[in-house]
Amino acid sequence: MSRPSLLFMPGSSGAASFWLPVGELLPVAWRKRYLDWPGMGSVPPSPRIASYDDLADLVLDRLEEPTALVAQSMGGVVAAKVAIRRPDRVSHLVLTVTSGGIDRSAFNLADWHADYRKAHPHAPAWIFEHGHDLSAGLRTLRMPVLLVWATRDAISPLAVGRHLAGLMPRARLVEIDSDDHWVVRQHPAQVAREIETLIARKA
Image (cartoon, rainbow, N blue to C red; front, side, top):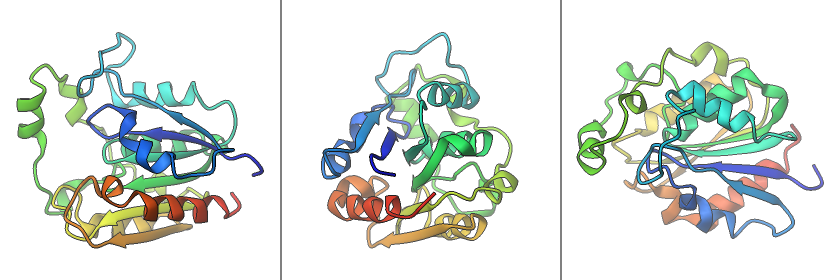
């Protein structure tokens, strides 16, 4: 890929500016786009968006060429849905501290819902319901995958990242010593280097 195309997607904050510290460290020639999530955080809602599947449609509408999806936390659920539905449009996949749409009941996850509802009392209920287990679909993905995890993240424990690494055939897990769910903001230079390494791998 001579001129990689990347689409950055945030977590439940809704603001794609989350990814700017990483994106600004990547090559200037790369095509980089940043997508907000309507209805999340302080981002205004859209009548078109009422489910994770609607968010996946929003992403697909922006994939004019094979693109690397770079997604944080709940954004990784959307990225996984897109990659499973249209693997031909996803050249590479970067998932950071996410459930990836797997069954979370087997893992000891901290519940972030109450704090989120307190901060965003008008958040729609569908934000907390990402649907059925995507494990079977994740096993079919053949694009190169980068997983970035904090070693002591209570919201998405390292065990989740290791489980996802075992599901996807071309996944590589990078573990960063941290307890910060926003670990990519804490270590943008390292994450940018890992993304450059990933893009160098052929889809």
